Image (cartoon, rainbow over all chains, first blue to last red; front, side, top):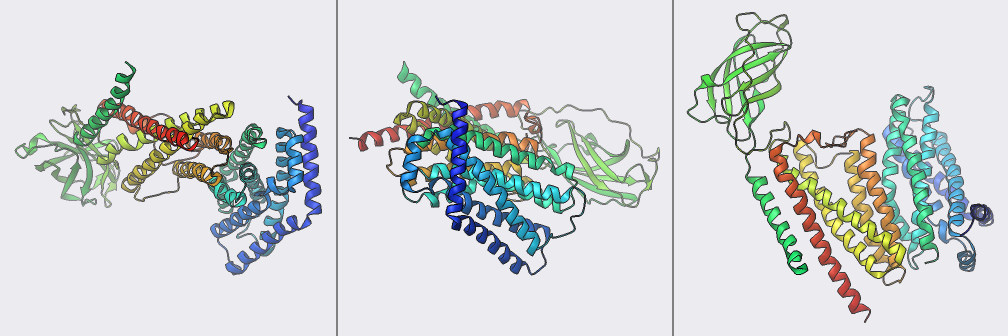
Length: 230
Length: 347
């Protein structure tokens, strides 16, 4: 049984490896960013400078959802086959999962910043958001929603990567229903924050989203060893 | 001995469900007031008709004088005169005074056999000024009467006759929870032992559970149409139910995508464990922390809002056992099919 220290060291190595991979294959990160910004621009053109809070929320989360899919959906099968085989024999599963999760959290944070930034740049806020605490609540909601989607996607990606043919298509099929609860909470939060609901009524939503993300991560960590060397 | 038990419980489940269907559809509903027409009363002498649903609360030859009706405004009672009584309605003549403590009137109908029927905010007197009801038309509180009805289901406003759906919708979800729980245990055992048999159990459980989940959605949708006016509404409990069914459909898609890959049992078990935990979160945790239209939720895990009285209990508990046993029976059949298929394929 691997010690906690060994697990953490594995996690660190994997996270570093992912980071390197991200820079070496710069096109992947760039592709996600391009996808996000292009989608926002389409939303900007479609909305014709005039968006309701509901429309803004819908577009934000659609873009966020599919950018997340693009970025995280293939997290578990982007290494070359030989690297993957090597990891399968040497890396400790829990450490590997933690490393991937850490990387996914970083990626999502960056992605949230890009998507939300592009939204504010192109579409602007749909209405005044100068009420104290409101921009913070919107940003926190987008971030927490993104994180709780991401942890689920990491799990789905891990399952789907075990399938020899059509794994990435399957990730989309399995992932969408799994992401519905997070999206329901997240859209509810964004819509509420834009519609002048008092923040005390909404502050439970980021907490729910965070708890859902943490719970999903925990389950993923517990279950991952069973599929990694199957 | 084992053989005898094997068919006894199956026959028992059929008998129980037969009882549930006969009792569930055959039992009359206690009468209750549904509407008052017109809903606006004018000052002076006016007439109003209170209509009831459920079993008749009067027979054709009952005297109108036996049906005492009062209208309540605020904390004062207004007397009325019963003009005509039919099995499902009562016509009143009211001397509406110019002053009332409140503009909304609640109706109480005191019947000889069916007890006291109540309709809140039955009608309104827009023109009335605020003040006391004059002593001439003020009524004393009549004696509360206990219903003397036979075996009958309670009347619930808005739900009315659809209360019988309680014997279908709720036990079907219970059966789904039960069989999915069985599948969860089977998947845990599969992860521990890596045996094909536990995998077959889990698959049989999920397939059976999905049937009951779909039936639960269908009966729930019918009920929503009747009580809330729409086939589907956005509600935490309903969202959770839909996502749960989609999740378990994903389980079947995952299995189908894996084909005859020998890791299918492992992967399916991992997915199933995850799905069951999500089921518990979605259907039992989240709806309790958010506002929900669905009864039994909104911070209230109990069954109080169904007002499950003894007559309903006498049918509801057999329904739970009957549907649960039928579900388990379906599961054993599916499991037998899986085992035969496995034996044939691995020959």
